[in-house]
Image (cartoon, rainbow over all chains, first blue to last red; front, side):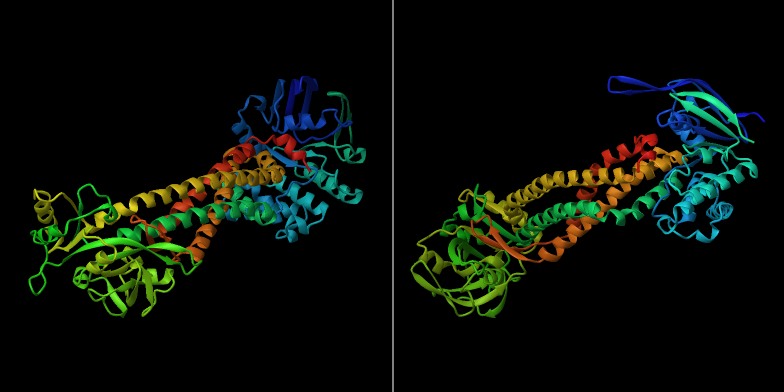
Length: 229
Length: 392
């Protein structure tokens, strides 16, 4: 399969007061379509910054970021937002669900950016909730769900528009071991059975074992790569 | 875009109950501003309506040339017949012109509210008062008699001042005057007056001149002929005005002042309320930063987010405006108050909250909401998505 993510000589620098902090140094990375990559490394190593660049939430200071065949570092803010809606599903550590909406309405949110009818949106949202095993909780609000269930809803929201890749930032960071294993198992199923490309940032070596490939970062650079069977 | 905007806006609005405390700052602040604005405008409108409605198009008032009001006018007794003989003046069944030479003077009466003495207009009029001012209806008692110290009291004055009930005696100019009647003139300026026989008032106040002559005309169209006859007469130096025109001029200054106060005080309060709205909306944006960032990450544009913040600010402002207008209407509409009129005497009028005033209040509320929502909306649109996503 071809590469779905290609980063060339990517650098990212922030200015804090008079100090310039280089978070990523001339980084090259290729991720194949259908891969499940775990990005690991200590805090401050640049893994979330790298994830944000791949997800189109941030722009590099230097270099090229090509995702799903698009030079996303060259897109305007509005074009980048449209691109994200079409190609990326996000899963966050703290779920980031809308507290006033039901699980189903939360899952429907990305579909509001499509041309689907209300009935189609409802049907697709219910399908996504079925995939994550929460069809019976469709009418519940986030406050009525456990942490694991909220993360499942977040995964359903990330999936519902059938994005090119799933970008997960510490998806199990707020969950207990058993629930974390359930969520990671679900991501593995999505990768293996549904062919979704997944890039996941994690501190947890056990979580990383669910990925096909582990990438380690330190001080803004990739230090090695490990293929998992 | 519309679908996005609607969805984000609805989400915003549904989150308001979770931010009830901060949201109520906008509602209460703007309610206060609108209540003050509406109340003072209701005062201006009530006063204007009372004074400006005093008069008929087929009645004319004659003042000394250059006089702005009856109180600084004077007309010689000899001129009364000349004026009433002019063309256009209506005649009664006996063929006498319907008109009166009148004087106005001021007497002091204690108010019902606090007993403090206030100025009241005592009008000296003639025996043709009923024909001249048919809108003036006796609701108790009878009309005053000439040559005796009797007077009739307007219903507005009767509500505002002590000791002016039917049969009571009022002391001024070293003598007692008996209240023989209570009249209503439909809430116009005469409702605040005391009226007695003009010759008796002149005698009591040692005056020999009239201050105005009011004449009933054959028709409103007779005014020009009447006016031309008087203003071209070389023996007279007079100004002739239709009554509505005269009373509209009398109310202009105070109405202007009240309008100025309404918008000046309302404006200062509006600035305060605007900062309250700004604070509330900044707080709303701040508390929803992660939600806004999540929507932006999913692919929602900046415009729906901006519109949603505006919509929330405008809705809360509108609620505040409606509440303020409702409170002003509930507590002040129809309340009788008095103020110093053009003759330096109290004019009783009712605060009148009109639909136009309510609309003005709501526009001000929306304006405050618009300004209060502007900067927070821009902030929401510029929110650093990456930082806000990781906020707990």
